[in-house]
Structures are given as C-alpha cells and as structure tokens.
Image: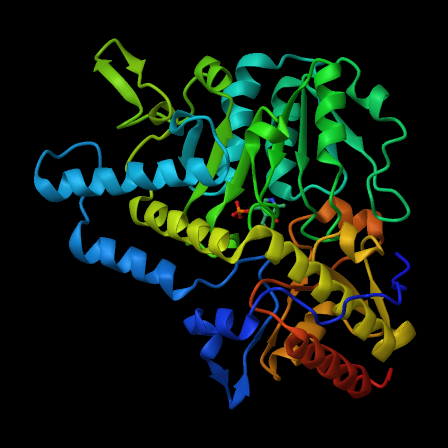
Length: 425
Ligand SMILES: Cc1ncc(COP(=O)(O)O)c(C=O)c1O
C-alpha cells in the first residue's frame, strides 16, 4: 500500500477549470436519482459526453448521413468528407504527421489486437520476446498471451514496485533482445504513470519497437505521438468524452505500410479477384467494412472540446482534485481506507482504487449508488495486478474535468456512512 500523506502545500480545491460551467455542458450530469444529485466518479471506465459531441453526431445523422467511400451522390460525398475530415482533425489533435497514420478501429482493444495479429503474427517467432508490465489492462495482455500460446513467444513483465510505480531496476535485462515493448501510459487501477520517455529510449536502444496503450492518457494530457517517439499508439473514444464504438491506432507510416492487413472485407482492398486480392492504401488497408462514421464525427468534436478546455488546465485540475481526494479520504476514514497507487498526486492519475475495511468493494459500490455516487467495483480488467496487490477486487473512484470537491465530499460522506452501516466505523 502507498503512503497517502500529502504535502501541506496541497493546492486543495484551486483549479483552473470552471467546473460549474463544464458540468452544464454535460446533459447527463443534470440528472438526479431519487432527488439526489448524480456524482459521477467512473470516467476511467467511460466519460460522459458534452452536448457539443451529442449535437455534432446528431447534426451529422440528421443532415449528411450515408455510407462512406462508395456513393457519388451528394450526401454520400458529404458523409465521406465528414468521416475523412474527422480523421484529419483526430490526426491533428494527436500530433500525427499525416492522416495516413491514423487507423480508425472499434476501440483501443481492437487497435492492440490489430498490432498483435498483423505485426505480431508476421514478425514474431518462437522464442522472440515481448515486454509488458504487471499493471497492464487485459487489452494489452490477452492479445500477447494468445500469441504466446500460438507462437511460443516469450513474455517478460516489468514488475510493480512497492510504491506502486514500475520497478525499472532490471529494465535493460528485460529489454535485451526483445522485439517489442507494449506498455500503458497510465494505469487504470493505480493511476501509475510509467516514465514513457525513458522506457521508449531504452526499448529503442535495445532494438525493440514500442506500442503505447494511451487509453487513460489521451483524455487527460496533450498527446503528441511524434514527439513521444513511440512507434505505435492506441486509444479509445469513450474515455475522452467521445462515443463508444471508436478507437484509434496511430503508427509510423512506414511501419504501418509494412504490416499486413488485419481483417478482410470491403474498403480494405484495392482489387479483389476470384484468385486473390490487393490491399488498399493506408489507412484504409486496416479498416475492413463500414467504419464507425458517426462516431468519428463525435470523437473529433470530443477532442476539439478537450483541447478548448486546455490540457494544461485539465492536468492542473486533476492534480489539485486528486490531492484533495487523497487527503480528504485519508483524514476522514483513517485506517479504514486503503488507497492503492503512488502517494504523490502530481505523479499519478486521478484514479483512486481503494478498499474499505470490512466491506466488499461490490457492497461499497452498491451502497454508494443509494446516494447516487457512481464508483466502479471489480478487477478493472487487470486480474494479474489484482493478484499482485493481494485482492480480488477494489472500488475505484476516478476524477475528471466535471468533478469538483463537492463530489469528493459526497464520496467521503457516503464512505463514512457505509463504514458505519457495516459496523466498522
Ligand atoms: C489502460 C486501458 N487500456 C485499455 C482499455 C480498454 O478500452 P476499450 O474497452 O475501450 O478497448 C482500458 C479501459 O478501461 C484501459 O483503461
């Protein structure tokens, strides 16, 4: 367990975001449940969507919706322009060199599977090593475990340190001879932020490519994939105030070009004969079938929205609120709460996984729900990490742009009441 003591200079509630007006942008947050204000603390699972995103998708559907890349009639051309225009905006938001490097997928899970199937199955052979870490989401574990079963590749894991950062003591040995480092930019359980720059440099020095799972990064930090220096970077729309059903795989153009197609079908071909087929150019080579057209429009609007809030302001807000939450929960619940993850708010994400003494996380979540406080309970798709922590599940409160100290206070009230109800308070 991490020590959650905080510096006395903790900036508490001072935040550069106007949270009240941000909340007003999100229609769902106006909802009450049995007269209680909704306290949404599950954005690490899925963020809510601002009216701007909902309006963009609705306007597109109501005025210009048709399938893309096929029709020559007016609205089909408009729909294609909207889809490809959204891709260009997404490319701009993540600092891609060109939209050819931006492959639209169903989610980050599909993006990582794309890499494992295409690059992995064409490049990895028995005994080749892929380096992961012990804090990965199943999305960045299971595709590689499948390859290990199928191909006999070796998986190596950067271990979790006592303080819930990554233990890089043996990094050089782990990377020695490896073909790929595939690593999260932020843990969805602990809030741990691996030192990406150092990891990417070390992997490249060892001759390995780097894939970054940016699912928990893109919603919170300005993203510049080229400056970051990774070879592949994946994220998912629904965590960055966008819709479900869309994710993105960015890759260096020559790398994506060298990778074989993933799924087969319409759109991903240049030619099909009864005796063979020719793949399409990037990025369509990796986009078989009708893509998530409306969702692309929504994701571009979502990234516009976050960029307008300003990623520096978002990060500052989250550090302040995380510090406030860690201090408040620790002061009010004392030994009854155990918060996992690194102790220093400025060096972690606003994802607070915790255990409440004597109360199962699912009971915590259910009782909090009676006060309209939404927290997630379970293994958070990170079962190996749960085993390492020695728990079956945790409750998890995650903080985002529309949360404030009132939300944290409601959480603390609800946890105190839960603790009292179960007789541990
Ligand atoms: C770090 C991380 N990677 C991958 C995923 C999977 O996202 P999706 O279900 O959108 O593919 C998540 C979702 O919780 C995540 O937090």
